[in-house]
Image (cartoon, rainbow over all chains, first blue to last red; front, side, top):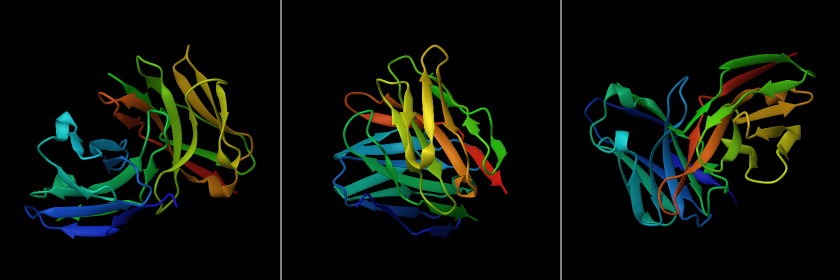
Length: 113
Length: 116
């Protein structure tokens, strides 16, 4: 079963409020990724967990936090949502090296009002 | 800086016609190249990938892609498209993120519309 699940499918948030998005995978993958996708833009890597080690991209370092309480789950946390956070958030996982396939969830569409 | 460029934001073709979606990459090391497809309301799914050997790689649903080191390209092709191929297609390159970590860098995607 090559399934990555994301909850919820749609999320509405208020400006200044926190947001928590959830992702799970049952493939025992060692690496889990979070991407942000806005219209007419490439999916942008925000951060990833390799095992228990969190790696955040330099340009989004202070905007997003994450936790991985076990191998199967990974969350994406926004402490104070702004309008610019409205986007599709994609979770993905894989194991192994550079040639290995990334498996994606269906995404969570976040709208900040 | 490493990057992926898909020059065509939108492509429209007639059903049964041939298709080429273009992708150019910029990466200093050996590239590991991917094409993903996103159908409406679904996650990204792998179409095919290249990491060594024959520069023409076959994928699912009759898709193939050709790697060209001299042109830094990885164009996607299909001989005869079907209406169900309408989707967004993403080209991506896998690159080192330090140590044994790797990440995928994507192009902006090409929206393919197949008309009757």
